Figure 1 (cartoon, rainbow, N blue to C red):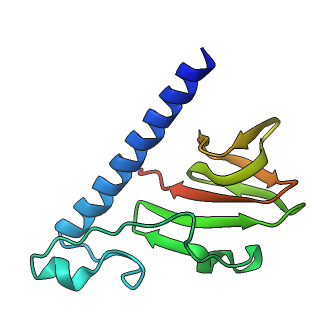
Figure 2 (figure 1 turned 60 degrees about the vertical axis):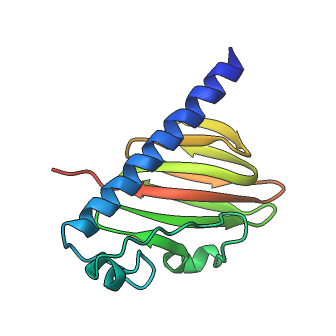
Length: 154
């Protein structure tokens, strides 16, 4: 039963990730320039009719310290932003109120994730998808995650 839950979670994560990529591509195809064109898809090539696909290696992607978290964004458009979160052994991220939907996917290691009054341990290849809430996390041995913030539309 746990294996089917893990499989279902992976399928859900991939489905959401594909949906997000399609939404980002649609924003570009309908001639809306990305918020951060330097780090997003190559807008000039898209304007010339060339479709550009970006592939990111989450294991080897460069990241910055938590204090420089805004520099860790590797893809962003008006619907979502994606960043790598590297935590050193024993490191904690303090309470942070997220006003958008979020996904945390563990690339390496293990983290204790707290959401409001709940907590769960996320291991490699597991994902947490949540509505807006108060989050914090910590690790004992270190971890690398992909965090995705998904804006809500009104």
